[in-house]
Image 1 (cartoon, rainbow, N blue to C red):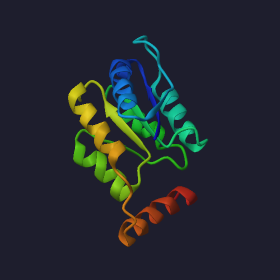
Image 2: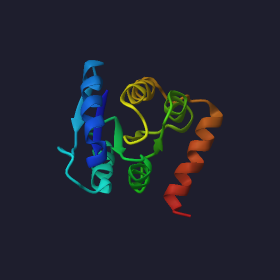
Image 3: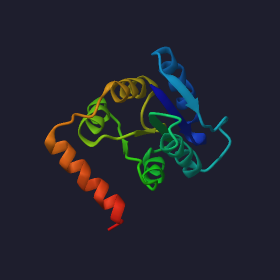
Length: 149
């Protein structure tokens, strides 16, 4: 799987650790920055990850900021991106299985490295369940996105 990953300054160190683990698990990693702990703006990196998915350069994405909230909000502004913040493995896999998310948001200042690694493993290992109820619900989400109402 091709995984785009991006982080602001607060998420830089976690991003660096995760990209090594993702690559070691056999996935290709597209690192979209940032490249240090110098202060930057999280929306730039969430947008870069989302745009990489929309352009077909990545299959899934991971965005990291201090709380995970800002990165998730920014990613979700792109039509076609479904981002969920996860602080546990259940949410990480269930959001893919039931909601077909394509971007995972992590909170570097809240979630420790070992837990974040387990969350990413659950996220990348999950597949959307093509059950009628999940398809119906996803189509309703897509309709909201299409009409912006």
